[in-house]
Length: 168
Image (cartoon, rainbow, N blue to C red):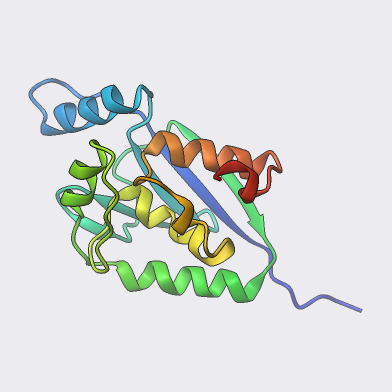
């Protein structure tokens, strides 16, 4: 008896590239790194090792052939749940072309949680994974996720910590 379950992978990419002071990215990434006290300032996704998704501050949501910068750190999950996986991919693909959510990012620095339906920032785009696989988790978040808090949540998932024990 053979299985009809296709194995897929979801990789969360964390970016920590350093820019030069004359590049605008230097200042935006510096602000995120200082506020979060973390090396990583950006999250992107790679599906099945070749399909990339990311939300960039000047470009909005993209599905590029290659990521803008190489990831510094990766967390990969192999997924066998085809129904949820297809839902996740469809939700990601539906966001391509939508604008970046500057307001949510800026207010997030002050602990104010907002979320626009048609605008995205990098962590929020990656968070679609949790919306599909762990519904109701977003309601328990007190603020918007930073790259650091998203990474820690995802590390906990990889370590086998159930999501109910990560966020109360």
